[in-house]
Image (cartoon, rainbow, N blue to C red):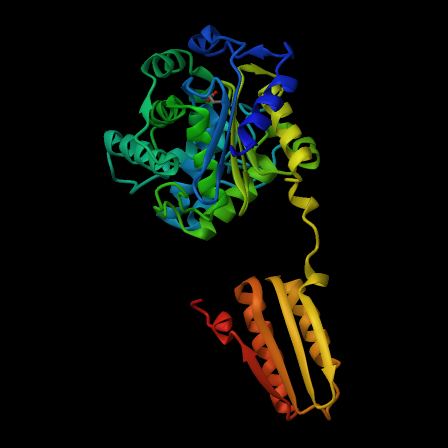
Length: 401
Ligand code: GLN
């Protein structure tokens, strides 16, 4: 058989494709030449499978979707505290090119709006490196997220740089507050080049999947950034990625996301999937109209809303056999805090005259660090009560398993 996922994606494009709403961005002259009817979607899974449909071969400039990835590189290079000292993590409630600075400090409110992304760009790599080297580190970093060598669209780069007055103004303003000492002309040039990196929807899906996969590219196996960086970036995407539509987006779609003015959009669902879409017409917030629709549809159909995750705690106890002095507790599924809490409660109910408990772990799917520590503590406490605990598959409680 053939997997039905590509057919499903085609159907999604079919139903979301007929809208003519929105406008192609024209404040960057080269973007105004885009074919507004192009439409594509790709999904990348945690085991490196890509499904794509529509105009998936079409390449376009990444624009603001580069921001979370440059932020990831800055975090990797300097650590959380140093980056937070220069760029905040609060949603601005403003448009992407607004002057959203904290009044007291002049710190940009977040790295997803232009003023924050300018500072973030200047934080990639060692502060002493030259422009070529920073350009290269940004390009190499984005390429590692995508799993292939990306390049820059020179026409888009030149076109945006010639009309970059607003970003230049933001660059000078933020330097006047002392948040950065970097040369604004230089930062805007490098940032504009970062935004002109060319991608297709497959690249976007893999980049998103790398964040969703804890910073390790599921295609190449390369650990691009550590898990804490991926978590930080996804958190900021969830709250700030869709600019002043972020609240509406998160309540409707529930997937950490980022949009770009060329019409690209990514969604990264932790542990599940990376999504990339492309459709050039934008809504009043600068987000792709049909890209948003496609993501809404995927989220609804596939149950991808992060806040819709079903509680698993009640199901981890498969069976509890109470047989006189010997009991058997069979666990299943993924053991995290809520599941382990249920196991500890069950252990607490075991009467003190029980001599032995067999804890069967052979059917559990996974146990995270918290779940492991909680189970070990339960076993220790049963032991203190004089109840011997026998483990079936004790290797699952080995921290390196
Ligand atoms: N390069 C664009 C700019 O700075 C990126 C904006 C966007 O994609 N929202 O204006």
